[in-house]
Length: 341
Image: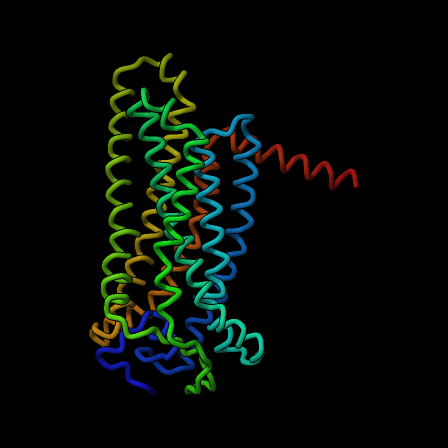
C-alpha cells in the first residue's frame, strides 16, 4: 500500500479511496458500503421525494409566492442538486468496492468525476448562502420593516440568487484544474478508485482548508447567529409590548418566522460538521495517524447527516397549519382519485 508521505497534498478522495489510514479492506469496505453507499442512496431518494412535495406545497398553498417561500424553494432545489451529485461523488465508489464490474461505465464515471465534484461543491455553497438569504429576509421583515418593501421583493431576491449561483460556480473553478489523474488501481480488495490531486500546497492548505472553510462555514455562521438573535429578541420584545388582539393579527408572520428560525438552526447543525470534516481531510497527510483515521470514518456519516436536511425541512415546515392543511387536501384528493378509478 502506498504511503502518502509529507508533501503529497491530497484531498479526502485520495485518502479514502486508497485506504491509507483505515483498517482491513473488507471491514472498511462494508462500513462505507453501509453508510456511504446504501444509507446515503436511501436518504437521497427520500429527500428528493420530500423536496418535491415541499416545493409543490409552497407553490400551491398561497396565490402569491412570498419572498421567503421563493428563497426556500431555491434552497430546496440547491439541496436536491447536492443530494443527486452526492451519490456519484460519495456512494458509487463504495458500491463498486462490493460489486465489482461495469469497467466501461466506471471508466466514463472516472472521466466525469471532477465535474460532478465541482457541481457538488457549488451546490453546497449555494445552499449555504441561500439559508443566509432566508435569514436576512426574515431579519429585514421583522426588525427593519421600513426596508422590506424596497429590499425584500421577489424579483430582487431572484437577481441575488442568480448572482450567488455565478459566485459559487466561479469560487469552485479551481477544483476543476486540481485533478492530476482518476484511474482504477490494484488494491487489497481487487481494484479501487485512485484519484490524485496536483501537489499544490496553495490549493489544499490555503484554498480547501482556510479560504473554503471561512467562506462556506465561518461567514454564514456569523451572519446566521446575528440575524437569529436579533429576530428572537424582536419577537420576544413584541410579545411583551402588544396585547392579545395584536398578537393574533401578527400570528401568521410570527409563525413563519419561528419556523424559519428552526430551519436555520437545523441547517447549521447538519451542515457545519461535514464542512469541517472535509476541510480537515485537505490536511489529512499532516494529521496524526489516529486522528486522520477518525476523520476518514466521519466523512460518510457527516454526509448522511447533511442529506437529512430535506427531511427536516419538510417536517419542520409542516408545523405551519396552512401547509398541513394543503398536504391533507392533496392526500384526500389522491385517495378520492384512486377510489374513483
